[in-house]
Amino acid sequence: MIPNSTRRSAQATGSTLLVAMLTISTLSLATAGFILTITSRSRVAFHSASWQQASMAAESAASLAVVEIRRVLPEIVSLPTNGWTGWTSSTGVIPTSRLIPGGTVLSLVPAPLVNGGEGNTTQTALVKLDAPTGMLDSGGHQWLRVRAQGTTLVPGQRQISPDKLDNRLRRLGFVRDATLGVLVTKPQVTRTLEMIVRPVLPFQAAILTGEEMDVDDRRSLVDSFDSSNPLYSTSGEYDSGKRKAGGTVLTNSSDFTFAGDIHGDVGTNGGAVAPAARIRGKIDNGFYQPTPVIAQPTSSGFAGGGILSTLTAAAGTLATPACYKLNALTGTLRITGGSQPGAVEVWVTGDITGNIQVDANVQAKVYVGGNLRMNGNSLRNDSRRAKNLQLYALAPPAGQTRRIELSLSDDIHAAIYAPAHAVEFTGNGDFMGSIVAKSLEARGKARFHFDEALKHTAGPIIDYKVASWIEVVR
Image (cartoon, rainbow, N blue to C red; front, top):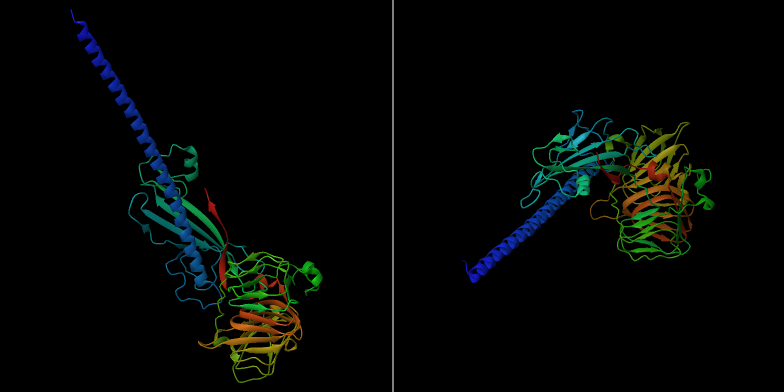
């Protein structure tokens, strides 16, 4: 017979062992659950990081394409001899002009980005560029399309996340990359961005300066009209009763003074412009817009070049403008046209202090190599359309300064692009068109009326900007 004390001891030992086993089992289950939770969260974190990095790779490739577009295609600079280096063409022929033919797709594969550490270690990209037929602005300028793919590896095993919504969102490729439609040897994810890039012409605002702007007369005014739209002009001319609030005034400087009324937006680079009754639009004190200088014309396209004070220049066709070259202009430049619309380009390498008269049926571009000093009745544009008298001031030699001085003794209809010239207005009068200058000073009651028709119809392409972008999901 087993003593009671021995029986109680055995029961106690068995109970202790059972409790210990139950405790170990509970701790094991808790540890396993914890490990599974941590593993799942780590997997989700790696998946999320790879998904984000694929977007970054696509964005980087798209940005690289925009940089290439801005390097090769703007008409304001000489066409580079190494345009589209590293790109391939769907037709096998790389474009040698500023035109990307319809149906041609240019492709670029940037070097892979390889890094060490945990998570994804490789990022690759592919970017394609084309010019879709019919994607034109109102001036007939071609818009471009950029499609960029970014691909990154997904670290870890071929296991999906337990979160179904995450799986639908990220569409990771464990067996097949859904975006590329190919089988994969390692888990990966691909994201695709589509970007539309638009050309930028010189005249997008009433006034744009690189440096200071000083208009100190409270009677001064800026507004806008549209010579191409009868709702906002009368017979194509400015009508105060049909004015628009598109008279945007911009400067890349913090030095901004405009004492009059502004029917439009204001932008400065670090200025202190505050909302006021005289400003009818929005205010942005973080504005900046590059103002590149026009490239010097090629002398091979220009006739003449003697020291002529007076010239009667007959227009050519719109497709083939007649080109003339002068060392200076102290007399009268008369630009004549015929029964059909015509075009003329005149390059004055020195100063202009005489008269310019443009017939109504002619579009004239005058390149100014020196200074320009004129009054309103010396700058006659018979069409009274700013796009038909475009003045482009060229960059001065290093260490020299250039000026444009205009007296508003009579109305002036012109588009002036002079990013390296200081522009000064005197007198009381009206300027219809647009001005880009190094700096601008106005003394007197100067009224600036921006012709919005210039936005898409006047001047060379000076830049390209992103108009829109969207992620493409297949």
